[in-house]
Image (cartoon, rainbow, N blue to C red; front, top):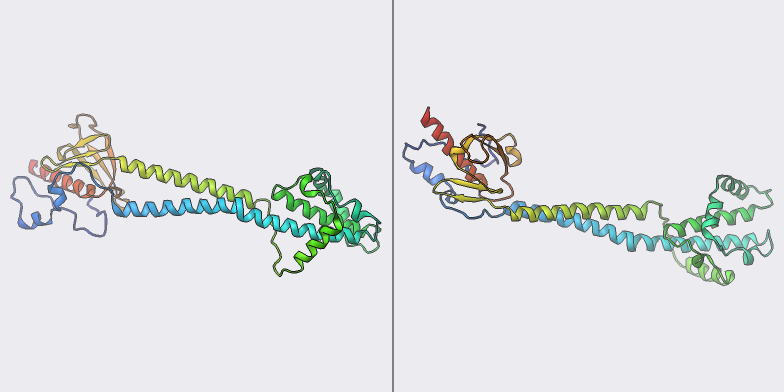
Length: 308
């Protein structure tokens, strides 16, 4: 059997003492009190409880921030940018009126914003408007600039789910342009546009974090419900199942994952229900369990030595 220590502190490890040999004063003093006393249910390990609680709190809290960003922060930022883009669009439409008389009054409203956005996003239309907007000799340079500004406005509205006639109908373009001009020329901070994935990514963060947090909460509840008990007189350890194990049932205490506080109890054929099977025990989640197993191991080794 491996004797690799569970933690850097080896004080809990008991030396094997044959049953026939009287216990020395030193070995008696080194035996933890909870090994010599029976326990109906091992308490949770405070270190594990605090650690898992803190991690769970932060994971769920981070998911809450994702919800806040998806519902409040990012939509507000997107709406602010859409308002700024509308100002840019109306200003470009007014300038385009010098090229096509009446376009500012007649064509600023968008009756079907979904259809118009699809038209403006068409590759050929985008190329033509982009080219004409910078071509000084083009007869539609100013109108092309207006359509480019309209495209940015409609894209901004779509991101915040405002791409509806309610938000694209402009009753009085001149008055609205005046109000927007007063608003945006009096501020020093320009809004930052949202990307298409900004809001959906926050929903994804919320779902993932709350999913993981929920799983962690269920795991904590599951561990709380697990019962490890100890009968000091017979040195019987009862693990969840329930499965009762005495030193006589131990064929091996496998500590291949002792550094992760995991131990595998391999039972011999004398066990009435799990003979030949291996029982995995996490000694980190519950206090006292590690010392109980070490005491059983010491007793089992001692018994084996007596029989040699």
